[in-house]
Image (cartoon, rainbow, N blue to C red):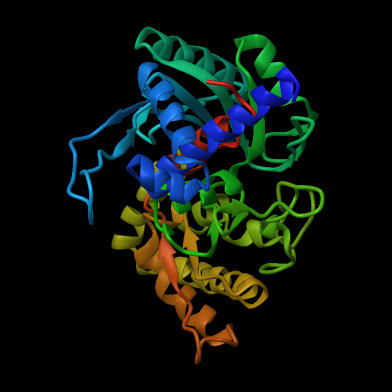
Amino acid sequence: MTLVATEDLRRQNVAAVLRSLRHDGPGTRTELARRTGLAKATVGAIVGSLSDRGFVHEADAVPGVRGRPGRPVVLTGATVVGLGLEVNVDYVAAVAVDLGGTVRLETTVPVEGRDPYEVLVDLARTCDSELTEAGGRVVGATVAVPGLVDRGRGVVAMAPNLRWKDRAVAGEVGALTGLAVAVENDANCAALAEARRGATVGLGQSVYVTGTVGIGAGVITDGAIVRGTSGFAGEIGHIPLGDSEALCGCGRRGCWEASVGLRAVLTAAGVTESGTPLESARAVAARASEDEEVAGALARIGTVLGQGIATVANILNPDAVVLGGYFVPLASYLLPAATATAEGHVTSTPYAPLDLRLSALGLGAAAAGAAEEALTGVFSGATAL
């Protein structure tokens, strides 16, 4: 066996142990050998090496079924960090997650009239500096973008609300920051975050629906993102549903996004957009609490929202559909009509009721998922520790 092949095998074995610790929790050497299929001696050598470098530690011994009590191996890895960045029309968010899954940094910066791209680059540099000063090493950064993403080439094919087209975001941001950068669709990232640490932990298949200026969906099956043939799956904001004359940011008329996106809500409520989508949504909620006409307008938007949810549920039959972004603070005004409409149109409802949930991660969901994506290379064995 060549030296390269030996090193590749070693890295794959290390990745298998790391994945088991991250996804299945702490385990003794014997349990890790069983979970990974590796020899106990191999696991012991890997654990020893990871322990020497501070990536794992062994907890106090616990009594076993028989024989000597085992000591569970616990993944820490605080010095290895993945950085997730979400760029949107109104804000740029950042979340950093270490190897053990602990959030090391979380922040959101309003765009406030600046070029979102400039805010993205500035925030990436700031976060990298802060994490490095704290003793961390950013092994990768993933930028979550609301649009069509060619993940393989690191190119945003189209993000109409950002006015980006064929933009080589991964290469450009990487060159400006010195980081290893990838780019991914924001709904995909948010869906992954909810599956790993949010509203859909433990579910086989889930759909996350974004609620910002744009509307998109991320689909998770057995813990993995469903991207489609070209990587463009989930663009549900552009299905022809709702007001057929409403102008969408993509330039077409009649897209679902144009009827249920944040701008449609603000227009219906007569509220001016300010700050992040959540801040704008809270202002709408305050108006609706005092104005029955605004509350009624939101209920009508909820009906159209339910029609789209029913479409998704009928096609995919997921374990749950999660609503994120601005949908959360406006849930009391949107969900009654949305739920009633969706349940009335989902054919499986009498046999498998629709499970409609709210995001547990708020506006940071996409950035948190992007941070998880940034660590994928470590857990797959492609990136050496």
